[in-house]
Picture 1 (spheres, rainbow, N blue to C red):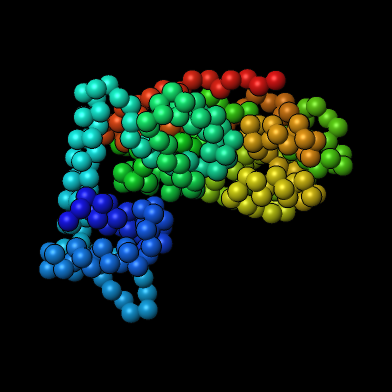
Picture 2: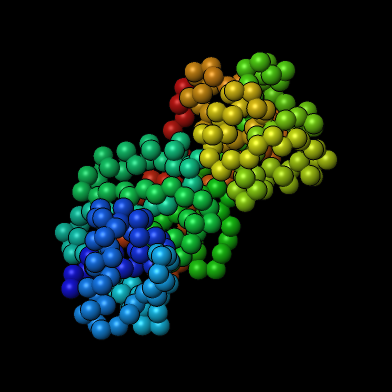
Length: 299
């Protein structure tokens, strides 16, 4: 039995998907199924419940024990590799990072490139997900670091702040507010808006600000992807409020009007989370140090 087989099993349980487990391990779905059957044959126990016509991932009682102990084996193996690298002072291995789209697409690429330049023997495995999934993946050990907006304190998690983002208003080029350099929150009353979905932390923060100021906007559409929101505004659906780093290129290209919000509270906090009870790998510590550094200001 190989350590990789234990990893495939744990990834299947964590991701709750044969296809995602296969993708993560660069194998086929049939190979995932075969490795699970191999484990069951070796230990003479059913590890997963089978329901005809369905591919749900549900553990048997034996599977729960096997999953728990396999996690410990994988953690011990990772620590072994880390200790050996530490003997020669080499920064290597793979740092698994989960992040939300708006941060991952517009703020992390520069940091990843800088990290890879400094530590060519190390690798960043970056996954994009929703906030709730990022937190869950960090808590269950699927990833080492999570990078998200408005990180909330949670027992068992350590939060390391990154640079905050200003939130800005974006508008179609022909909108009546497009020519303004700055607007107040009260100027937005009654306007058509393209929103993040309700469970996205940035949307929750916006709703609180609108409510506190007695502002009501007209919801035209809701999306969970910032690129879709930008495109919807560009073609005239309405206005939107987004983190400024996400629209730097659109502003340069002249495809969107980017307008500053007058009030100081239009700020989005960004942070890195990791489990408090786990020692980060040397590579993860170095990447975390890079993420803590202020972003370079571009002209």
